[in-house]
Every structure is written in structure tokens, then in C-alpha cells.
Length: 161
Image (cartoon, rainbow, N blue to C red; front, side, top):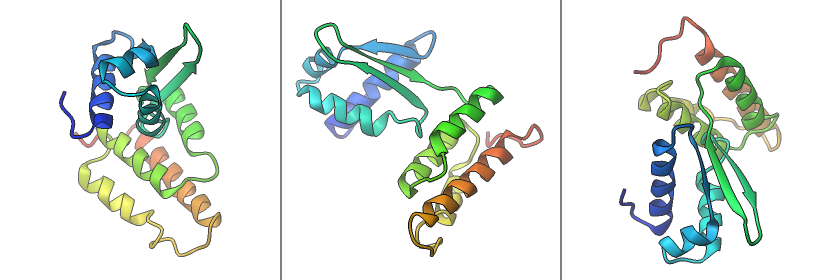
């Protein structure tokens, strides 16, 4: 469970908790995590906002205050309706390069893409490969990623295994 940075260690710990959870959901308190990792609560917030995003397959609910908690849920990509809802929420009409790359990484983690496929698709949606101005570039990228997801959802499409 060791990571290189404090953020890596916090991320790995939360992922370990999620894997250990029967339902893929954990409830944590920001202050308790901060004490466990000897850091300020804002460091926990940073990790949650950058490492546990919808693009990476997580839903994070936060309630601040004395009895506040953080609920983190791993969103599985196995049910078609759930996947369609997740794709719509994650992609929308515009998709930044960073969010698209995170989505490709998630698809790799789920066994839907090989590492080689991830790299090829990342190259295809790179800002240098899409020589149009913003926001049009992010619209084109979102369309490309939606097409990729729909292709992956086909029943006759084998997993990356």
C-alpha cells in the first residue's frame, strides 16, 4: 500500500478500503484521515477532488461540519444502463484532454482496453491531433470518446483481457 507521495498513500489507502468493502462504498471522516496521514484536511480534499473523479469511476459525496463525512462509491462499468448514465455524466458535450485520458485509464482498469489501446486512443484525442480551437476541440473529443464507449458496449466486442 506504499505510494511515492502523501497523495499516493492516501489514494492507495482509500482504494484499499473500497476493495475491502462488500458494496464498493466507504464512508470516511476527513479529519480522521488527516490524523491518520499526519496532514491537514485540505490535503484529503485535494486527493478526493483530483484522484476520485467521475472520469476515474468514483462518486464522492461530502457533508461538512461536526458529524461530516465523505462517502465514496466505485461505479462499476458492468450494467449497460448504469454505463450509459455514467458516460453521459462523465462526458457531456465537452471533454478536456485530461478528463479523456483519465477515462481511458479507467477503461483500462476495467479490462475494456489494453495499455496499447489506451495509448493509441490518447494520441488520437491529443490537442495536437485535433487542430481546432476551443471549445470546438473539446466537443470533437467528447464525440470521439462517446463513439469509443458505444463500441466497447457492443455485445460482440471482446474484453481486453
